[in-house]
Image (cartoon, rainbow, N blue to C red; front, side, top):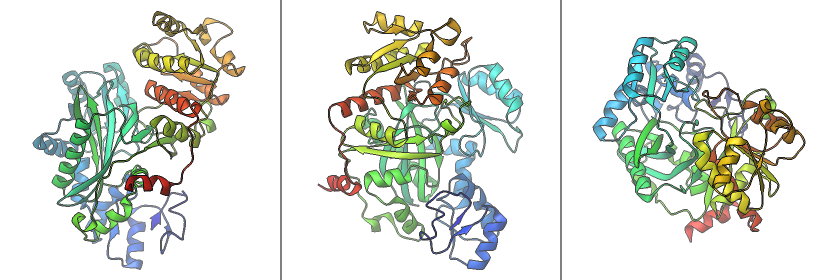
Length: 478
């Protein structure tokens, strides 16, 4: 194993026969290749960096095991990728590639705002942004990126209020196996590495799950993938859209493996070394419990950074909670990520206007659980109209005592705050920063607020049993 990332498993010298703690560059990999003379090199298990080396390694005579570099490049080349997806009849958000600011403005006018823009070949959603108008687009191109015919920017229509989902599959070039579909708890627009997700899905219809599985198999076979592939989807207006395909192991592979009791990395390696899926006797079995992945963030180390989630990845790790119910699994995942949800007390709700309907369900659930609610003026009036009692609290610029005073004095046990966005005159990042400074759990999406309420409810009802992974797996086999 060659590794340049000091995390525990890959630096554990007991895991592999030999560990090289070296930079992942073509030169370093080639010098190790010449010394070790292996049968071939696997580039699928290291994220984007090894994929970017694959073509150069192949040119230098290295045998790449599994998916060929030509397929890797095909998935990255949005134009060729789009043509294949069209041919397969799979819906995709309208998009375009721009090599100049003029082209970008033209594409934006054709597609319509909001847009998702990013450079091609990015790591972790870096420099990826949701753009609301032409002024923002001009700003993005000016500050962001080298934009050129070799390095165009990708512009996609942003699907508002879409549910995001993803699927990991093992493919052998002629067939593909999809062990599970994951539903993201945050709506589309949050980087998949930062989004909590649940297996099996809780709000996606069986019809859409079947569609996602069918599209995943079609794409894996069409692209000739040998090994692993991860595909991300968005469901909007009762349609499944493909967002992107990555012909490699994604960060969700260990989670799918643990929840479904299918050792995906081992199986994918066997396929890369020549086995066929039909030799592995794989079968999809219904999962009688829930697994929730939650991302772990380093925000407490950076008190001045706004802990807002968006298309650029900010998490530094992830955890998994498993339980018989979705709510309880979500609660366990929060505890594992050091976000200790309260079982009573006061919840502050301050959300943007467009998030109010979603926040209403969360508010109703918290009230039923015996929590008191405090809300800023707009939300306070909205709740009152819906018959939900809350106390009014002042924003920072409205006087004192205000939100920050209440957080500082320990009067608030949980914060639900979705950003008001660039349309607002007053920035509300001070609420999220205060939450981190005074260690009050905070939630920045209404979907997660509803999940948190379900989790608290499950724990208050006396659930919260601890089982081993083996006990959960035994339930699948019954």
